[in-house]
Length: 185
Image 1 (spheres, rainbow, N blue to C red):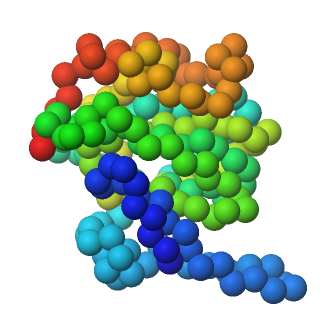
Image 2: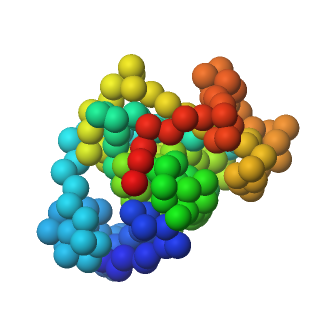
């Protein structure tokens, strides 16, 4: 696997080695030993999730508050998304900054974000199957989120605003400036 560092510490893009022939392809989607060696980060995933969404769906920007905060490794099995990780760690030199990456079924890229990041994605293809590994179990009482359309973040989700499809919950999140982050550096 190749690890591509980003501008924000704790967020990396992973490109697996894909072996293909006339039968199709094979790749190792995660190897804990190689991940630790190449990133310097230890992670113990305990839960895998999968979602299916259609064009225009925007999920995010979500996180879980401590002590149930999650690191995530995400990837696309089918389709194409724009994936976003926003640094919400108070005291971080990159607080309020974000990294975006396009994940597709063809590029096989994966996106890792450690604890202290809000995460979201927009669906750019007709349909997407999205998978993510988490290093902490889902705890509904610890859910948190930032507004997807925060003007200070100014994220270009690559979907016209009138085509964005949100859950009722995702329509009501605060802007980063109105939010008291539980993550400190």
